[in-house]
Image 1 (cartoon, helix red, strand yellow):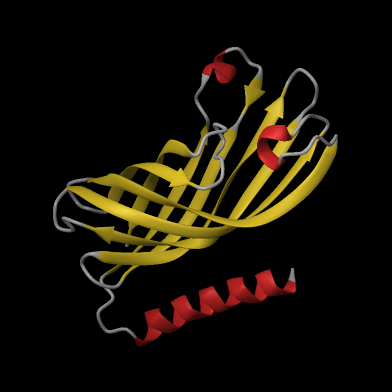
Image 2: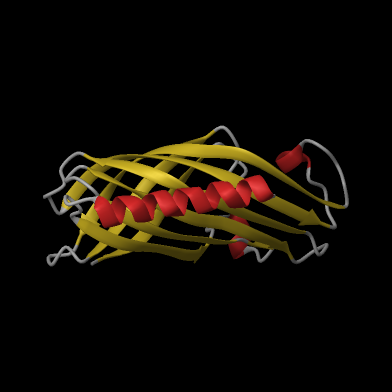
Length: 185
């Protein structure tokens, strides 16, 4: 746990160092996602799966931005009191292809460390074992092509992207459609 804490501190201090020493910083933004995962289980009230993400982005060139990110999800079953909590701590690097356009395609890479816990239910699809409760942690990440749709003032944008990972997402698959609302300052 100390190694993870030191790594996170190092990433944040490196970002701060780049911010304070770089003369070519073009923009800052904050991104937020908070929504239920929409699938058939939401409409049948079997599972509630809120998804969340918070990130800070620093644009260092017209095409390049990066920063830290916290994300994850929480799964709650109404039938057998089954829960899963998933927290991802990491960062991202984004390359934008048309940075001055209001419709901006991009590619994003995000390495992160996942902390996961589960209680009172089978966990075969998430950990490969069957336990009534437990926890795990592991290094993972995703690569995601997508587009950003900017407002006329370019202060607010909506990111739509498709993530691919070596581990499963909230949908239990190795890929998922995602979105995020951003405010640029």
